[in-house]
Image 1 (tube, rainbow, N blue to C red):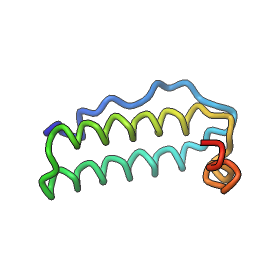
Image 2: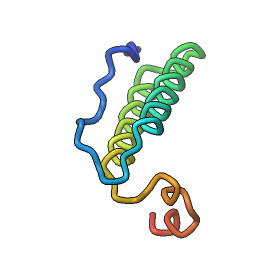
Image 3: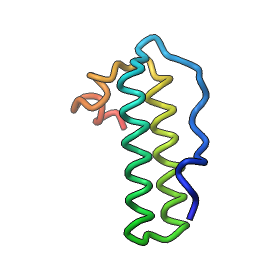
Length: 80
């Protein structure tokens, strides 16, 4: 399994709604989750798949014009 300390994080391009504290908490939560996956024995392929998807979400949340507060509203989720 890959070591979460060697993860490649999204680019440093920032959106107008960027909130450094939210980004740092989300980044840490992703790292913690991936470490947990490793500790309970998820396969390398599953770990890598989740890592890629979560990193895409991290990049999206950092670069989107949607504010963090509006990101998970029912209206927003219906668009997905």
